[in-house]
Image 1 (cartoon, one colour):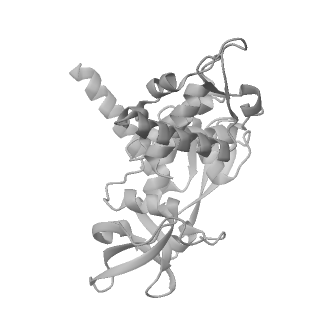
Image 2: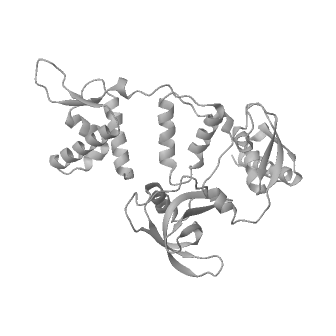
Image 3: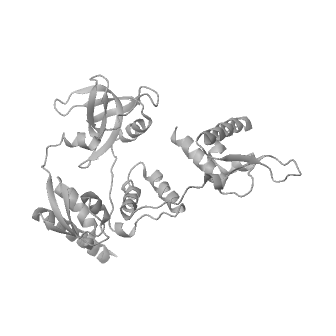
Length: 323
């Protein structure tokens, strides 16, 4: 399903849930912005009929009726709220931390809009992401590579693609035909994990080495992704830059939840062990936790965290002086 169609169906659901009376077709057409693109009444009728069937196939209880049992009013539509209602939604503190991070990690990426809308919907259900524990934490997923968006969409839709790829070993530029499985980030770089059709094997492609356009070579749903694919594990085996090390951190109970998740530690644990390879990457995460996290060891991680905190203090002082 295309993003535009998904957004149209979502807006239709919102419109039909937001009313306690029956909405006529004209009212529905005015309430859903995408229906304004229909040039004629016939085009709208066809689109609306398809959308109604799609909602019913998805299990949305769309019902029809009129405002009066005595008069033949124009037929109206709405969603049966009781049949559509979800059970109470609840999350653990750790899961709330993940939701908060997920909503912010795409702030500079092409998925910023959908992430923000997802948080709004969760809040409408009474789920409040753990914002307090994320103060000062501004993760970034940078997707400056032009290949990111088409490959992300292809992996989501299970559609095969083709692109030109420059290998690291020889620098040769060759056309590759791939079934995209997963997109994963490793040490600040984005990778595609998928099945190389020409080599009939699993391959990993760094997005920065893709040149030119990414084109789809087949329809959506053309293949199945193995359920046990671990993209990060595949990518990590290609990066022998640094051995895995362990850091000891002291955390304030109930805080620094992102670091607790990484360490696999309970909410109230005061001392945790975190595995890492990249000192600078972990230092950025620890520094973002502010006073809620202190590095016990190793020393180079302590120094990297202090360097970031001093830099943040200097930038704040300079900003205050300038104002």
